[in-house]
Length: 104
Image 1 (cartoon, helix red, strand yellow):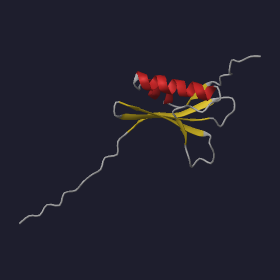
Image 2 (cartoon, rainbow, N blue to C red; image 1 turned 135 degrees about the horizontal axis):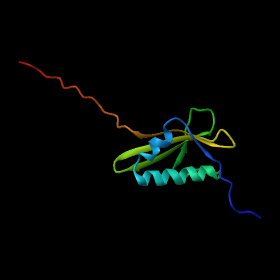
Image 3 (tube, rainbow, N blue to C red; image 1 turned 90 degrees about the vertical axis):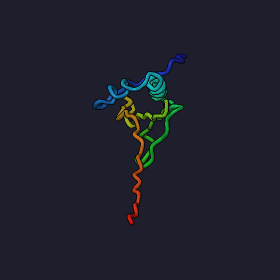
Image 4 (cartoon, rainbow, N blue to C red; image 1 turned 180 degrees about the vertical axis):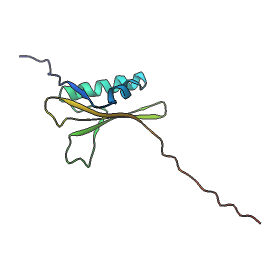
């Protein structure tokens, strides 16, 4: 019996691979392992299913690193390939506060 799992290839969309490779090495390692888990048919430890897409076919990998959050989004919709749709650093939401000045 063959215990070696079959790995589905990864298809990188647009700049997703380049964007991932520009991330810190620790993030690259964790996302690489998460994608490997997906390739062999497992749900990644750092993955969460994105809601609003009609099923569990779209997964987001999330990694916090030195105060920043990094994400990679992929789909398992196609049985023969893992498609990485997007890899990016989450930008912080900035809250604008307006000060009311009273002039006398």
